[in-house]
Amino acid sequence: MTTLSDKLILFAGCTLLLYFHWPLERTPSLLALLTALSFICLCSFCNLDCLIPSRLPAHLHFLLVLLWLILGILSLIHPAFGCFLPLLFYELAVSLHHTFFIFAAGLLPVLSFREEPARLSWTALLLFLIAWLLARKTARLLELEQEFRLLRDSSAEYHLLLQQKNRDLIEKQNHKIHIATLKERNRIAREIHDNVGHMLSRSILQSGALSAINCQENLKEPLKELSSTLSLAMTSVRESVHDLHDDSIDLEASVSGLISDFPDYQISLNYDMGPFVPAQVKYCFISVIKEALSNTARHSNGREISIILREHPSLYQLMVKDNGTNARTGSSGIGISNMQERVKNLNGNFSISTENGFRIFVSLPRVP
Image 1 (spheres, rainbow, N blue to C red):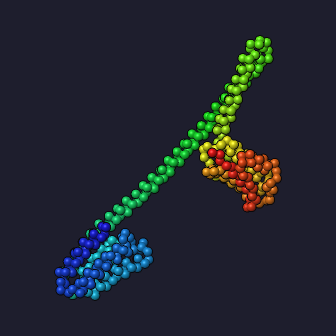
Image 2 (image 1 turned 30 degrees about the vertical axis):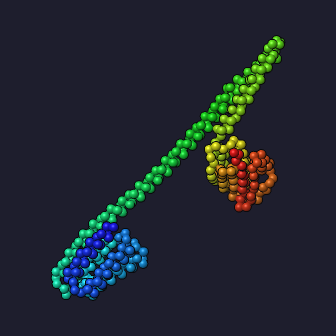
Image 3 (image 1 turned 90 degrees about the vertical axis):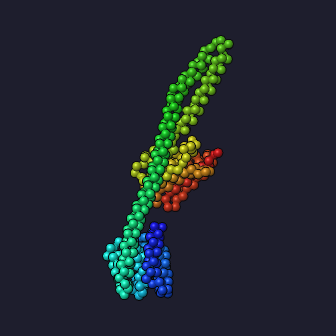
């Protein structure tokens, strides 16, 4: 928009210059006027952002230089076209950074108006000066606009990077909180098992001993009820301890611990599971991974192992694959049978592939 307003100002000045010196020659004046309008439109089309011509596509670069040459040549043919040379000077001053070529264009009015009065050349040079000032102002504005765009893009990029860092920090914080929660549950489960469980066991034994040595009929029934109550309490404590222990198992940490037991292998883990995985799924996957790693260490010549754990809307998925090239029987062995049995008990699917290495694939349905 700034360059367009500058061109309109120069076009108005050039038109006045044309009108005052050739008021009667309509045909050359009209041709020069139409040529100037076409020059403005085509130059804006070729270089709307006022880039250096070398940065433009080849066809636009060629067309822009051709337009400059056409207007320069026409100004030498007829002075009416020379009235619009300030437009050419403005285009050169904005687009080119070579001062020599810019000021070399200042000779064109002298050549174009060589047979005209001297005041015409001086008026054209005055318009050249106005074009130079407008071009410097516009170049500075374009430079500031480019710097603003760079700052804006950098700010947006840093903002997105900061958001990503914040999300990563929140995820790490949530993971640490989750791990701390699991550790606390495990500690509570141990405390209940070691203290409350032992005390209840001792109470059950004592009530049984009292029932054995009791000789009073009126105390038999109360002692029997006491033993029953203590047994129910013991059962409830055991269930609570098991539930706490099951919830305290971190599947990703457990798998990472299994991987650390095989330092001689390059093992990659792709873990994409939610925070709430059923205990039976955890135990099954841990057992399958443990057995698969042991089988690879005993029977495979591969040294690269890939473990993938994913949670889908309707199933849990596990895949363990190595790059071994030696043939292995996929359906025999106690380890394979144990894995198949565990998966079958959870109504899952278990399959083995020996193409391009040895692969174990397990899928377990999600229970609503």
